[in-house]
Each structure stands twice: as C-alpha cells, then as structure tokens.
Image 1 (cartoon, rainbow, N blue to C red):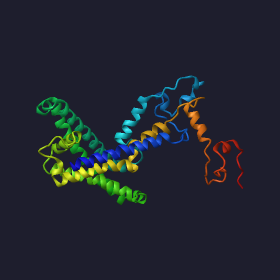
Image 2: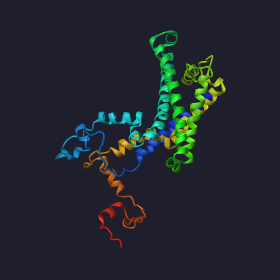
Image 3: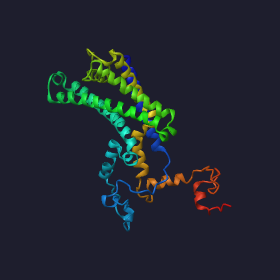
Image 4: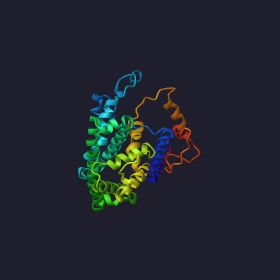
Amino acid sequence: MGYYILTYFCIAVFAATIGRLIYRHLTLPLHVRWEIYPVMHEMAERNVYGGSYMEKSDWWRSPYEPSRLNEFKYMVPEILLIRGLWKENKRLWMASFPFHLGLYLMMATVVLLLCHAFFILWAGTAFAADGIIRMIMNGLIPAAGWLGLTAGIAGGLFMLYKRLADRELRNYSTFADYFNLLFILLFFVFALLTVLSGDPSLNGARHYVLGLLTAGAFDPVYAPGQTIPGAFTIVLASLLIAYIPLTHMSHMFMKYFLYHSVKWDDIPNKRGSSIESAVIMNLKFKPTWKAKHIGADGQKSWRDIASSAPREMK
C-alpha cells in the first residue's frame, strides 16, 4: 500500500502544480501583443506567405474566424516529430527525437494501462477471459512499452553524449539540464530492467494501475514492487510525475498557452472588449525600466509615458 500512497501523493502534486501554473498564466496582465506572422490559424491562402486577415479592406466588419484545422496541421508534426528542431539542427534532432518519442510512448502506455484497467472494472471476468479488445490490449501495451523504453534509453544516452561532447551545447547546459536528463534516463533503465527480469508483457504494470484505481482492492499474484527493479521503477515514475511540472520541463504542456495566447493571438481589439479592459489596466502600471530614454522612474504610469513626447538623449 505504501507504493500506492506515494503515487497518489505525486499525482496530487502534479495536478496542484499544473493548476497553479495555468491559474498564474490566466491571471497575468495582458502580454505585449506581437505582430509576427505567419499565424497558423490563418486561412491557407494567406498562411502560405504569412499574411493576415487585416489585409482585407474593412476587416473589422467581418467576423473573426480562425482556422483550428490549420493550427492542428501545424502543431501535430511540431509536437510529435519536433519539426522545428529538424529544420534548424538535424544532428541534434537525431538524439532528441528518439528521447521524446520514448516519453510519448510511455505516456501512451500509461493511457493503455488505464484503459485496460477500466475494461476489467467494467466488463469483469468477461474481459479478462477472452475478447478482441483484450487481444488488442495484450499486443499494444507491451509494444508501446518496449518501443518506448528502447527509444528513450537510446535517445537519452545520445542526448547525454551530445551535451558532454558538443562544446556549444556544453557551454549553456546547466546542472538542472544534466540532472533532468539523468533522472528520466534512470527511470527508463529501471523500467527496462523490470520487464527484462521476468515481465515482458508488462503484467506487473497492469496490476499496479488496476490497484491504483481500486485503492489496492485487487491483490495480484505478481506486482512490479515485488522486485528491486520494479520497486525502483514505481518510485522513480511517481517522483517524475511530481517533478516535471516543477521544472522548465513543464513547457511540454504550458507552451500551448505561449502559442495560442501569445504568439498566435490576433483577436481584434474592439471597443468594450475584454482586451480593451486589459489594455486600460496595463496603462495604469508604473514601470521601473533602467533605460533612461523611457523615463520609467516608478512614478509615471505607462499612460503618462506613452502620451508624453520622447526624450532626446545626448
């Protein structure tokens, strides 16, 4: 039961931290709106050359209709294939992609394990005994698990080598970068040792997830915590769940807000809108920038600075 308590606690930390991050983002002052194109939810004919709906005459009279499909077409390969890194640094992509693929497949494995547990709780012995869904699960769970662990270890080792051997990467790699990489790599290694030590079908993981959903009501014949590698896998996986949102690795889900609420934010600012209200609030802030030509002394508001004549610097 001790393993379950640890995992419950780490999941609670994960949920609370993500909730705090999202709340903080939603309550921040309005960002400085960018004028950078292309915006991926533009229509295809304008997206090709980085155009904007504001090119149309009297654009403010037309309804604002962003294309969510175009966003989806951009984001899927960007997230799953790390397309931006492929374009900028193909050699680094060769290490980063399998590492991220391993993480994605581990997430997919967890989802499959949850589905497997739900099917057992819903269909009971009928699901456990036979059925096409059980056969599919029996194939998908070990396939995703084995491939994810293999790709994750290979990519993690390659990433560690690149950070140590590549001078440019080494110059700006911090202790946290190495620690995060080693932490995840350690989880991959112990998880692989667990399946190699007599659980190739990930039965222990299935029983553990089922136990999590039932507060330990199921008493399996074999559980991963009964072996030393299995115990380390449970502890490391649980700690990793709690640790990720506490670090910059939270970018894996928080950059959704960067793209949608900052980078691609081209919602028109109309009179009486929430954007107008947020801009008015921003104008009341009193900046303390060090740049002398701004005149931000902490006494004048942005409204005062923006409405005054620019100062001449000698």
